[in-house]
Length: 234
Image (cartoon, rainbow, N blue to C red; front, side):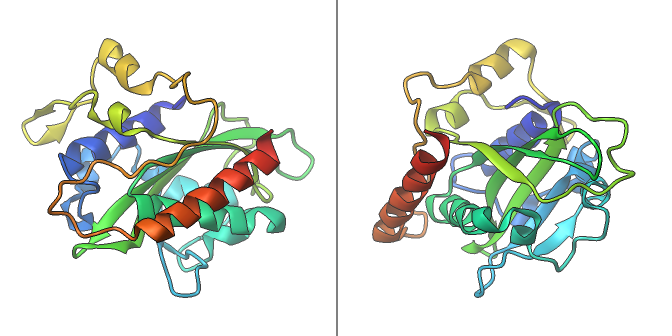
């Protein structure tokens, strides 16, 4: 994770979930992440697998030049990548595992901008296949960002956050307010796992009491996602 806002959302989500695979949506306190709230969004896992926006922050709307609520998240991507992104989102839900994506986009007549995205599973009244929490942030914001809408996004990289990374550190909370950890403790979480140069899907860290997962479905998604990754990035 390269962007500060992406790291902060991950740390908040990881602290909130505790020992569970994912936190409940109604447990989230917008005030706790108010500084990055404008960069966040929530997607619905609908029956048509279009993944419409349920919520979109003001900077997300500005990035794409319009209000995104109700629109399909897949429409923001190149048509040939829409299925791949849908598979990524289903992997986040089925495996209860965060996924980091790197992407690029351009505005008409402008140079491309690098984006970092993070997709996080969240439960909705105990159900896992209903919502996905996300954030999108430019690595380095150009002068035109927010004044010109970006074109369709082009995927560049993917990585699943491994379970040992999520267990590495518990961020502190003081007076009911989330506090980002120190730089030293951040480095424990966000170092890249060099022993896994390929994309690997993990099953998260839920307790035995968590709802049973569809292991056959997860294995199928693992194969689809790994095949997509191999075809695109190797």
